[in-house]
Structure formats: C-alpha cells, structure tokens
Image 1 (cartoon, each protein chain N blue to C red):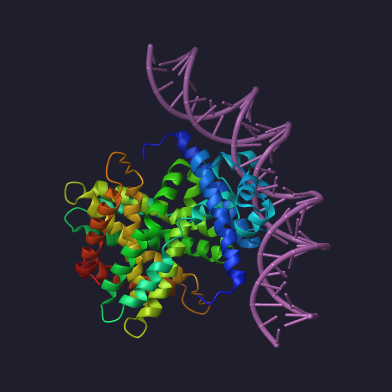
Image 2 (image 1 turned 180 degrees about the horizontal axis):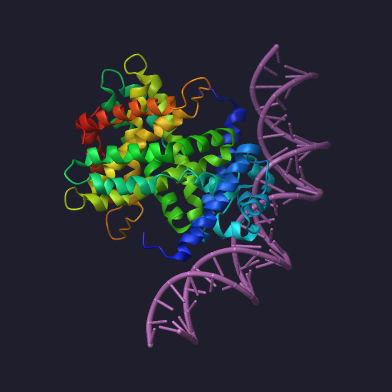
Length: 199
Length: 199
DNA sequence: GGCAATCTTGCCCAATGGGCACATTCCTGT
DNA sequence: ACAGGAATGTGCCCATTGGGCAAGATTGCC
C-alpha cells in the first residue's frame, strides 16, 4: 500500500509485459511467438523481459494472479463480528467475481493446449493461496490460532481448485455469458456446506 | 499395470535421468550442473534427456512423484466395508510413510533454495492429486457421486499441502529421525478431524 | 540539489529446445 | 512365427534463451 513510485513502475512494466505475452499466446498460441516480440509489443527490450520473468510461460501464467487485493480488503472489513468461515466466504466470492475467475479460466484453457504452461499456472495458484493465507492469519490473530486458519484456507483452495479444473471445459457459445459464474456460485455454496458440516 | 516392456523401459530411463538430476542438484545446487552432465551420469545422451523432460527443473521435481501406487492399491483393498473417509485416511497415511513424504520434503527444501524449481514442484503435487482423485472416483463409483469425491480429495490435498510447506523448515539433527513423521501423523489426525466434523 | 539504490538496455556467449533423419527395439495382426 | 508399424535413443544442427557485466537513466532519501 505504501509502495513508492519506484515499485509501482516496476509492477507496471511487469504487468505490461505479462499482458503482452498473454495476448500473443491467445492469438498465436504459446509457441507462435518469441520473447523478443513480447518485449517489443510492450515497448521494452528482450533483456528487460528477462529481468522480470524467467520465461514466456511464467509471464503468461502471471496474469491469473488477480483479485487478491479486492479479496484482502473485503476480508478485513467483513471479518468484524463474524465467524471466520463467513468472512472467508464473502472474500472468496468477491475475489472470484472480480476478475480472478475469468482470467484463471482463460489461462487454464491456454494451459490445456500448452502443457508447458501448467507448472506455472499451479505456481500462481499456490502463490495466491499463500498470500490469502498470510492476510487471513493476520486478520484472525487473537481469535483463531494460525494453524487453524492455515488448514481452513488449505481446504478452501483445495476444493476450489477442483472446480477450476472442471471450468475449463465449459464452452457455451449460445448461453448467457454469466452461466459459468452462476454454476460456480452454486459450487461455492456446496464447498462451504462441507466446510461447516464436514463430509 | 498391464504395461508392456516398452513402457516400463521408458519409465526406467525417465526415472534414471530424474534421479541423476536430483542427486546432482542436492550436491551442487540446481545451477551447479548442466543437462549434459545429468545425461552422462545416467548413461544417456543430452538429446534423450530432452525427450523426457523439458528442463532440469522438471526432472528434479519429478522425483517427488512417489508413493502413488502403494496408496492406490491400499485404497482398493480397504475401501470395502468402510466409509470413504476412513479409506482415504488409510491410503494417505500409507502414501506418505512409504517414500512420498521424505522425497517431497527434500524436493521442497531444494525449491526453497532455488525458486525456479517451485512451479514444477507444485505441478507434481497437482498431478499426484489428480491421479489419486481419478482412482478414488473409480473406487467409490456407485457409492459416492464423483463431485463429492473430487471435493473430498481437494480438501485433503489442500490441507496436506499446508503441512508440507511447514515441514521444510524442520531440521532436527539431534532428534530421532522419525520426529518429522510423528509430528506429521498428529497433523493428519487433525486434518481428518476437520474433514469429519467441519470447521 | 546531490548521493545511493534501482531499473533499463546493449553486448555477449554458453546452455537449451526442438526439428529432422536414422538405427534399434518392441508390439500387433495375420 | 514373422513382417510391418510404432515408439525410443541418438547425432547433427541452429534459432532461442538466460544471465553476467557495465553504462546510462530514473527515483527516493537526506
């Protein structure tokens, strides 16, 4: 939050490079372009790309890292006076409906066609989970032990990850665009039912 | 199971290459060797390495893919006459005590020192999860709906993943070698308590 | 306003990935 | 049993890549 101009600019270049890589991957496929072209499209040099990402795949996958800020902010607001589970549910729904879900879906679709993307996609998922976990532990401090929060977040993300897997195949050109989101909503309800009551 | 000689040989080469890469990574660090050396140590050519793994990292991480067979076999045996949760618990404990846990721990420790390994480690974790999930769905067919099994496996692996993260730091030279395993056992008890009763 | 830390970039070269071709080994249908 | 077909290991080759180094530019701190 208190990040200076320097860090914001660095983040901006990284994002610009990632978006360029993502766009190129969508229109030409992951093997249809070289890093040089990504850099050029974003207005940077090949060398600068290498300063931010170790490879094309990491850049492309990184665009799925989205919605964390929204979720974290919401989490702090709603956590007052509610149980941890309720707070988590609100935050998670917010994160996914913002941009997180559609981006993740697009990236997973790309990964389906280009297996070399997979490791980086799951890495991004893992980093998001760790980020949320950390914030959650902080928010719940004093009310819930860290190990409890960690387990809870693990269970939530593990189950959500299942749903993401299935979401890739959904391809409904004639349906309402919101169809996927609606289904996903029901799915989340199911997830939290199990979290509250056990299996 | 009915795999012919061809597939067994292929798997053997892949394993030999992976073990060589893993050993080299342990003793020299991930950047302390080149693929050429891995191939040479395993008795194959550089070109053959590339036929099996896209990069050093993938080969090293792949050694953590262990214990699945043991778990799957156990799962089929114990699944008769028990609830799904009991069967899962038995199978998971078996997988982790075989070689899975120690290998994963070593690999995660390497990844801590070499971040470029991380994506591939999480990829392996994910593939193991999918493998178990698939077998589990088959075993539970007719008794539990696939979506239920999928969620259950997701929750289990999500929580276990938390524990693995914490396990890396554990370094107890003077303690019994089994200390880590014992702690992990208690942890699993905790996990299944939450699975049965909810949070 | 100036100093220190950080970022971008060009230059450079070893390491890498993957296409192609060929020999060898395994599998499958007859 | 055996011949054709498929998959694997390998050498050769070259475009792509990662990352060290140093110079020039930009930002934050005093």
